[in-house]
Image 1 (cartoon, rainbow, N blue to C red):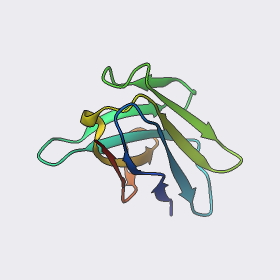
Image 2 (cartoon, rainbow, N blue to C red):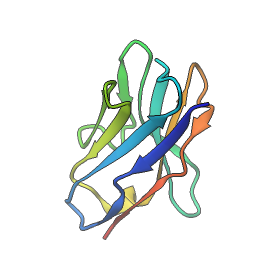
Image 3 (cartoon, one colour):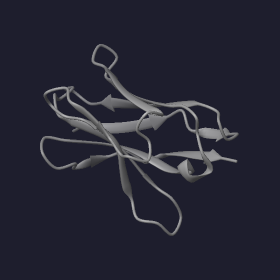
Amino acid sequence: HVQLVESGGGSVQAGGSLTLSCEVRGPTYPSWRYGWFRQAPGKQREGVANIDTDGRITYADSVSGRFTLSRDNAKRRVFLQMNSLKSEDSALHYCAAGQVKYIHWGQGTQVTVS
């Protein structure tokens, strides 16, 4: 059973940076696709960035050029480096994983930008 545990959220001022971490816990570390999503109060959940099984990384237009997704297989972690944060980035950020569809989700880590 795969469990995803996010960390690294917090409160920062606009223009600041945060790095989110998603730890993949369980007996195996699947070579699945992994993604970061976020949901702000009153808004739908949106995709932020994802890495496919072939290593290709894609970003939402709203974060392209500011966010960087990376993966450390040895540490079984997926990271989201967030720079030049804006107030509209404030949301609960989730890590997700799956072979095709995202079926495993973490509990989320809150990012607040003021």
